Image (cartoon, rainbow over the protein chains, first blue to last red):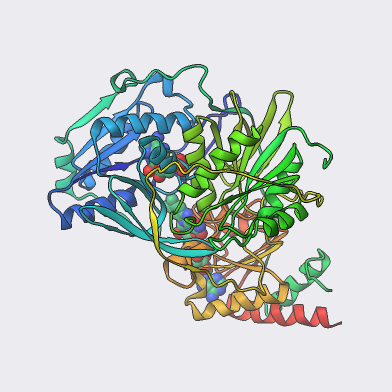
Length: 261
Length: 329
Ligand SMILES: Cc1cc2nc3c(=O)[nH]c(=O)nc-3n(C[C@H](O)[C@H](O)[C@H](O)COP(=O)(O)OP(=O)(O)OC[C@H]3O[C@@H](n4cnc5c(N)ncnc54)[C@H](O)[C@@H]3O)c2cc1C
Ligand SMILES: Nc1ncnc2c1ncn2[C@@H]1O[C@H](COP(=O)(O)O)[C@@H](O)[C@H]1O
């Protein structure tokens, strides 16, 4: 079985993330680029399956600019993935979800797969839509936001927990799934893994290699304006001397925040 | 803008597999009616159309389309996508709006891919400029406000639940037939399903005016009753940090933050939450923030309007009593 894991590079959420107000695009230089944690968990799902089913091949796939991404993606190889495919092309600068999904679909077809595993939502303003778009473009079943996953030769299944309902669902392979952070944290790469990663196959493709030529007239989501909101500042801070509860109640009452008072 | 019968905006509303309307329809129809004429689309088993049409007209739908589907619920997503495709062809809307729920965005994303339309996800509202419909986004935890639009064609957008206050006026009931041709696209099947137990006396976390959240500082799931007591004293909803979710104190659906729910209530109270940047990303646009934490260095104090350095196990019971005292007189 071949599993493709969709890895995304994002600015580290622990850092200051900024947007270029001219272009509306993320400023790539400000926060350190890292693998989005949720995509590391997606990789963990694939690696655990390979441990149980040694015939499994785990391929990383990522679309993003050159620069730091190849290094970032190596971490996934060091964790244990078998090989990586990086799609990059100047024409992809500022690509919207639709274009990104089209590119990932073309690459996934070229690689070939039984299962694609993605994160449910990206931390860099992604909207949890890409895996669904991908399933539609590939013409395969999809399961979004799984908080548990069972994979066998023919099917993938899991549980979906929402605010309003819970259900178990199953799909025939090939399929695309996305997972939530209810799934286990990813393993750390060990020294052996880091050394081995240097020798693992790493392919870089551009749009031409995928047979894609995105047209000017295609429908795209475009940013038309961006503005920074003023940062919040700290207000009053007190140290409890035995009556802090009463003081908060005073504050609430003064600000009309106690209903029926 | 209820007399505006041009510029149709197609709105997919959330229904249960039995055909009951779920929360959020009023918000979606309100947002749609603020820029055009709201056309509601619901997917439900047969026999529900008349009732749904009445309920949706009451919430502001000028026209209602009901896609009859017995398969919805068993088939996970195809019935919704097929219904969107059929309704889109019939209505030819300027924009398509769906809830940013797991199912809502799954359906919207698949439909946008199928119809080759631009997609805007997790919007906090829609508007209009000279060239058509625009989508408003609040990104990086509300640090930026970004507007987007479709370069061409209709825009498909999902609306963040609880983000929009506009409500539409009730409309006369207008139910239109809709024939859906099942695409036969491969789909997942639900093997078992249960409705979540909704604590009816408490408001929904999304869209609540008041949210009281607890973190790892609570120390256990049982101690979360302290968070509940304060939430109930104020009539608020309950939230949590990821550490509290990971420790199993509360279910994941309560998580506030970057990878959880984003809230922007009138009042947010953080109990035993350090205020890591990923937690702040989900609550820092709240109007008023109160924090109780025993660590004076906790970053939550950087965004709190009123911060108390103290032990939540003594401060919260006193606070609940003081609130009840104030209400009593
Ligand atoms: C990609 C990514 C996404 C994330 N997404 C989210 C998210 O969506 N939401 C989220 O919340 N976090 C998220 N996190 C995790 C985040 O970084 C923090 O780990 C988490 O918010 C910490 O939760 P906490 O404040 O409850 O726990 P801690 O950081 O352990 O803080 C507990 C606090 O309780 C205080 N305390 C303890 N006892 C008491 C007492 N008796 N009285 C008063 N105060 C007390 C302590 O002083 C401390 O400040 C994410 C992290 C990553 C990497
Ligand atoms: N550029 C990308 N390259 C590879 N995978 C991606 C990319 N963008 C999104 N994904 C995958 O899709 C998931 C959901 O992304 P999003 O729809 O952006 O929230 C992510 O967790 C990734 O697994």
